[in-house]
Structures are given as C-alpha cells and as structure tokens.
Length: 179
Image 1 (tube, helix red, strand yellow):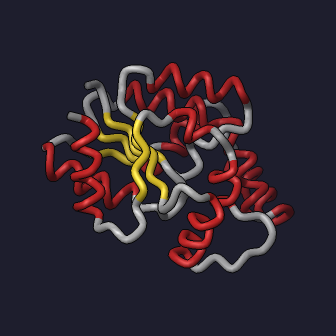
Image 2: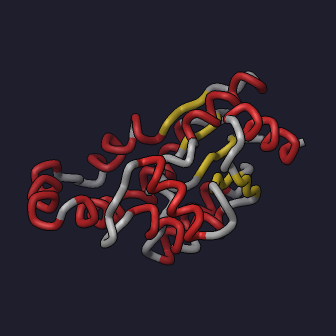
C-alpha cells in the first residue's frame, strides 16, 4: 500500500480520524493544508490577487481561484509523501474541471481512498456539517458544493459514514475495509 488517502468535506473529521488511524497502524500522517500554498506558488499563485478576490467576491471566489492550482498540489503532495496517511483538505479533491478529476484518479491509483461523510444523504450531511461549523449561510456554501459534486464519490474506494461514531470507531472501521 503506497498511501492511505482520507478525503471528505470541510469539518467531517479527516484530521482527527487520520491521527486515530495512524495510532492504530503506525503510519505517519501529513496534511495537505501544511503544503498547499507552497505548491500553489510553484505555479504562480499570487497572495495579493487572492486578497483582491476575497474583498470583491468573498471566500467562494477565493475557492474558485484555488481550483486552478488544486490538481497540481494534490499530485505533488502524493508524490512527496509516499507511505503516509494523506489528510486531504476539504476542497482539494473537489474538482470543477473534468481533466482535474482524471489527474487525481491517476495520482491516487495505487492507494485506498477513504471518503468520510456524516450520512449517505447530502442534505442530512450538510445540516450536520453546518451545525458542526456554525455555518448559517443560505447562499454559497463550500460543503454544499463539495457534497453535490461527484468528485469525491468518484475518487473513493471506501466510504465511511461518521455521524454518531467516535474517531476511534471510524478508524477501526477503515481498518476493517483495508484488511
């Protein structure tokens, strides 16, 4: 097994579950969010431009700007950290460009990809995550975008539903699938 890749929406518990899984199997964990901007900068990411977008369009505009860089950052991350549990940020595997989804499938091809979702139902999952994050938006919502987009389900080789389970229980369930 090259890596174990943990994906899912924002605040689903990827980081906490990754640590629990690492404790059970002794594999190191690394988070893409610690490296993402460095990878973005390799392609010309501009912090000042991001700030202008944030002021004019808010976080949804920034998320769309980041999409230009995400597939590359995921490819580099997988390449740079073989033999790790890879904690993918909530938006890093949400693809808006079909060619990016193909790039991620290729990058992940030799590793199990674990999708964490609160529930099988999108609306129930969104309500759960909005409660967890305190999000009260009725307009643009990154988790709605992630949950309604087929990217994560297309990438996943294992899906684990997390609501009402402890991180340890979720990690043990993942282990059962991996064996």
